[in-house]
Image: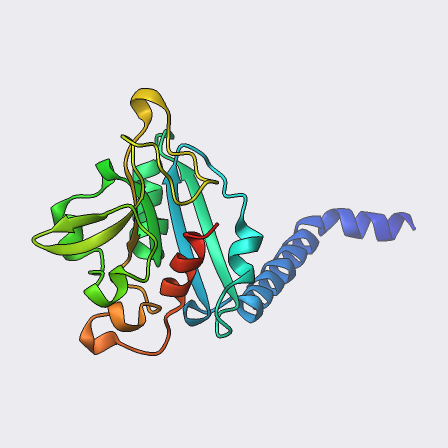
Length: 201
């Protein structure tokens, strides 16, 4: 027994290394098998005064059949790294973005957001639009003057912090159906359906 323990003690780092390699390999294989493809999920990025979204289950209950999941990434605009989170989880991977007006500008409308065509303006419940050069790019979901909101589970701020908020569609999204650029159009309209569902929560 002492000899076995001595041998194990002498080679302990080799055993630990083997265990770590097996665990890492399993995690990689399991992650690859269970990972949901971009075509099978819609990602919603929410930047508000709360770091949570309580109606996740209700939102997913109304998703289109071809989607396995509607993912929600909610972050507080008050945290120091919000701009970085917006770049990575909003502009790069988000299909739908909900943002305060201060994070939206004309340059973003041209390069990042999909135009909401006349055909769709009437299909979305709204209290206005974010317009640039006669085109709509964002659906107004909270008005700081009237305090009217279309989604009651999001914290839009109070007092001096209260802002106008908009729902926008990322131009990169694969789920925009008719709102996509002509060369990217397809039948996948999960982002549109998810937005319509969001506006009823």
